Image 1: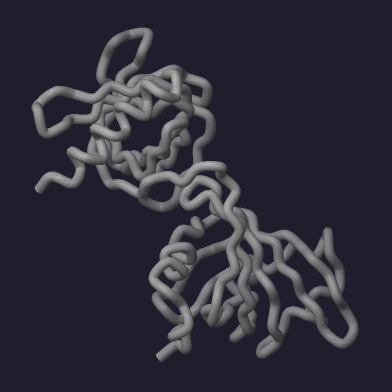
Image 2 (image 1 turned 120 degrees about the horizontal axis):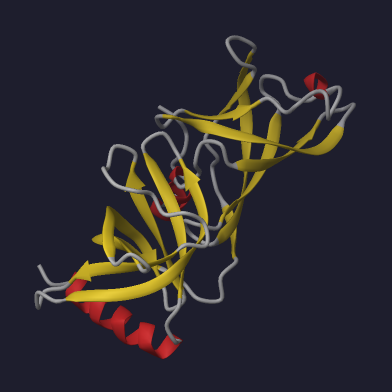
Length: 227
């Protein structure tokens, strides 16, 4: 079994918030080399390994002298869409493979350090909603609200969901059902987009005044607690 007993449930959530394709910073050192380089996070192999793409050797030469089995490295990344944090942790390299791609497999970290980026925390949710095109006043695609705050939210859309995907800077409206049978309406603009193998993620900045959104958020969170 992997040795990750030092990780809390919050730490594990942060690890699983790392999405394939996201940029990470690796701090590596050996008796002959000390360097910080950027590369791509590839994925997680169950509870055993984290997987990273071997950094581009055309940009950073000589990395083979520092990225090798049993050497340690420090990983840093930004989980802005998920938790609004910079996270850093130390891992040990378990194996480096060259085919079919050059990849670095590492252990799980034994602990994680993090630093918040947002002035306000977002409530983690899984609330079904419908996206409406503000200009056309037409339903375009169902989604899930993954987190929400007074100023914005993140939504996700399944890759197999039928409908039109929103575009960056598009104005849209989220309709969220509540327990009274009336939809809660939140308007905003799409500010960023990411995706993984199964879902697409969109960051929404709300249009409404903060106090108005706060009222809707309060109602939404109360309704979300009702069985």
